[in-house]
Every structure is written in C-alpha cells, then in structure tokens.
Image (cartoon, rainbow, N blue to C red; front, top):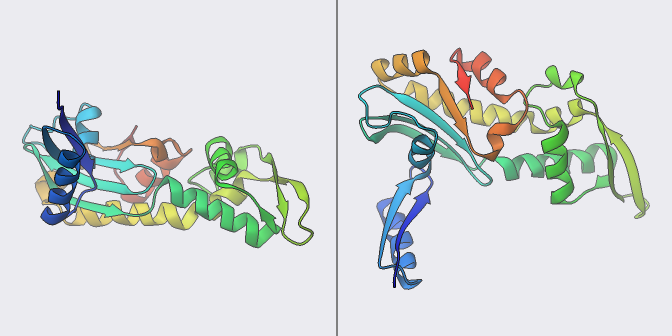
Length: 214
C-alpha cells in the first residue's frame, strides 16, 4: 500500500519548491504528501503550545540550515532560514586547522572536535581541556599529531555563531510587539543537533536578553 508522507522543508521555501517536494514524494510512491516547515515541526516536537494565541520562538540548528521562527495560533509569524549550521561549524574547524596549523583533517575528525571541545564562547572555552588531533601535515605530507585547545575551536566557529544570533535578532525585530513580549516571557527553545554546542544557550541569551532553553 502507498503511504501518506509528511516532509519537513526549511522555512521560507516558495510554493513552487513545496510543490516540487510533494511531486517528488508522489513519484517515489507516496499516496499523498504534505509539507511542514522545519521550525514548526521542531516546535511541535519540543512540546510548544503552537495552537495558542501566545507567541513562541524556536531555533532549529540542523546540519545544513538553521531555521528561526516565531509561532502563534498554529502558524509561523516570522522566520529566517540560513545556511549556517552543524556542517558549517565542521567546515570552519577544518579551515582553521589548515590555515593556522598546516594540518589537514577530515569531516569526521572536525565533527568529533566540535562535539568534544566545541564551544560557542571563546571566553568560556578556556575552562575546557583541549584534545589531541591526528591529521596530515600539509608541508611534509606525513601524518602529524597535535594538541588543539578548545579556544582554537571556539575562535574557528565564532563567525558562524554570530550569524545564528543575527538571524534570531532579525526574526525578533520582524515580530509584533505582543509576540516579542511573549517570547521574552517564555524564552527561546533551541532544537537540533547544533543546539548541543557547549555554552550556546548562554551566548544567545546574553546577546538577545531573552532566556534560552534546550
């Protein structure tokens, strides 16, 4: 039997793009297909009162995109989708080690570093122990092992963290005063794998003056 399919799409996709996703699902064998915007699905998953007249804000930091949205009365009020998320963090770590240590590492190593010692705060990263990393020396072409500090990783991803904070601020600025007041009362909910980056809730809260929860 052909299943019914619900597909998540980034916030801000066009009707044409939604139609293309639905058509692709039907070609793949779905009896019926529906699309739901990622931050709305994330808000439901986080247990937010999406149908209530009060406003909620969700920030979904995935692999490819970060989706920011304010939600009220069963719909998205304002949203932003930026191509800065977990994959960009990994890319920034790879570039940082290449440029500053002449060390070439792969995506898996970069992700392991992000998970183990990654921090959204250059200041707070000083309290995190560094880690030993293996890669290829770009000068000799030979394997090389070095010690990398958490501060190095925090510096590498700092610009990406600022991009996410900017998207949150811009979404709040586009939201009506009433809903913005609700968000200030109830806080911002972070979801997605990227939300687990150490100190990210603190940094976002410091910058937006809004409480942040995971």
